[in-house]
Length: 473
Image (cartoon, rainbow, N blue to C red; front, side, top):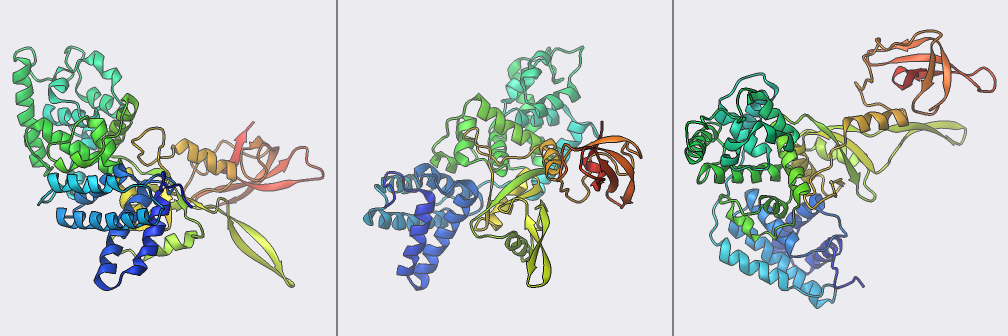
């Protein structure tokens, strides 16, 4: 019997599914919808061995509200999950259900009749990132208030009065994107980073004028605004962090307070966030503002799930395309009777690498939560999705000797290798072997193969080797 002091998410969902058989008709559909919502959230957010507790249920409830569920529907789902959890307690699987009733009471007090949450639409996010990436890469010039708004967001929601007072010597302590923003506006002849008439106005006057300009900029972009500029920025920063896959409780912990525009987040149990975790979330938000190029991630296929199932799932989607994936397979031969049959065998059967923007991973994983889950950065409570550095992907592809389409270590045809060159093979079946290039074997649109005579091999061994696996000695 499971440990009743540690009723895990996996155990809970399995038990809840088994309880659905006790209902029929509309009741079964209602419980099924609530369970589907919780399963979708937990599968994309947690490990099945994590405990099902009040913090997780609060995050699930808040995430649902922020994604568009009405207060009535979200509370209805919570009530159904509470009933299922109560059944687990009666069955001896779970020890206590008080945290469920506590959460339901808090919901009744704080979210009664709650309306729609401030939303960050895809269109508004697109306008924001188009502006921010253009200002950061220098392809256009912006107003001081635009740079200051981006600085506040990229620096972990820095208050505007601190943005206005920021001096050049304080920039080095900021994250990479915040430093890039500062480099576009700072001037060696000025002690302040932003030109806001700091020497002529009082700090309060500077902050008030900057707040008005930032609020006007947010309205022009169609961003959600509520309250004064600093409060509007805290709400926007929270929505951006949530888009990065950060849990609501971690967002509240990083901000140190509930954003005024998102009062439902008061239901969260704030995660303890140190300086490292806050900087980590701030950097993720900053990378989004910088235009966030696509990065590599890894999804783990669930037991007995095949890669083809993921492909088929996306083939049925009408509003989302399958991301670029890397699922290397090697060709193996099996003898069946008198015939030799060739088949593909995955190099790592249960791991699929895919390339995506950080902000697209969450909606992507919601489509395949029952088939796979995405690895997260577990170095802190923030737990956003773990991007794989490009260099690590290059090293991995070289080590196994398989490359995704279009992968090049150097442009095809421009590698400094020719006949009689001494080379070492850096990956694949002949890794670390040295040899001499005999000739160009073949040249295709995306890669080149050389014929290499191996040194030290018994007999006369020459093999075809992809140019991307060769280095001159």
